[in-house]
Image (cartoon, rainbow, N blue to C red; front, side, top):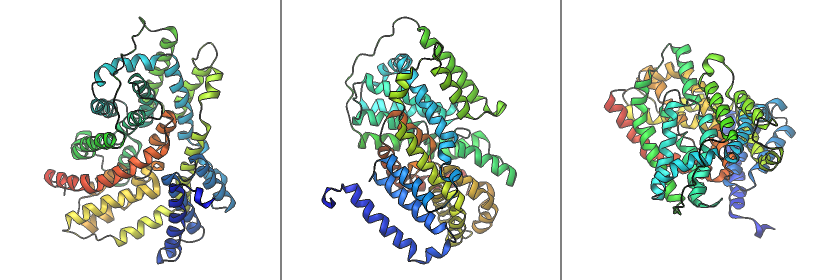
Length: 461
């Protein structure tokens, strides 16, 4: 039985006991009180299982959820909060919308328009998809909505170019769409939830709100444009393939009745998403309302058979497990305990601009690992005045260092849009996990020094 273990399972069997021993038998254990230590051990084990894919991802999710309940680490409403979260229902509605876009032929119609401009080379294809994702960030403020709309179209583009399901080409196209419409757009002020949390908390706590253009100028050249270039290069390197240059499918005249109905529903959904600041209805319930319409007999375009065959329950369990980990971290207040300790350990001092900048940027990234992306501004914004005194940086500069942290995703569980994109596309999460980890390392090694030089040139530090 032991000899039958896969390499990923061997890695997990070695890493989990090793990291647990380092946490339990070192002074780090003294940081935690009560149930925080077993919670930290369980969270760490879950992160290893998801990162290595030692078990099928939905089984890893169930293991984490079950152990959290058996060990009474948190109430059921916390452990299973992923199943009641808006993210879970966004995924369900996204799957239904994706089925409708595909089955009505609307995705085929849209993708055939783009395919003719992108099929000359694989590099041009991946570059074009990433750029389309970035452009969507300027016109559509919800990364979740961008994923729900863009992934089905990207899948049909991949099919049009002859990439079989599970091929490197198909996986590369999906990753380009998912990462392209998410990671570089953190450099666009209203394009993602952590950006908006930072704006709201900095305004309410410190009375400062960044302007769109100053935010874009400070962050987009490095964390937007250069990160997009880095993303393209990585996908081309990790998922090489060659388009088959298949002839784009020709549309048969005008829109069919089913396509027209779907287009009306999608435009209405998009309209409600774009105006959520007026009506204050969650994007999840707007998406679920659209999905319900698409399921109604005589109105919708998704049959009961298609729903039963194409809705992936295991993907929903994976998201529930990942969100359960995030909820456990927040409930146990591990992020606050670790965050304050780490702040005291950092070598912060006035006059050490480079060291201060790198320390604060990496602190924000580390906070995102233990508190998810939305937890970065929630955790660090209240500490900004104290950090400003410790570093000599302006309050505004301290707040802006958070952007590097929540735009650098180390593990997929940190990001709801990435957790949504993989199930919607039917691509194993391990591919997103690998790309996240490699991109995070290269971002620290390449983009962080460039970001520092850019800030210096602009006079922010």
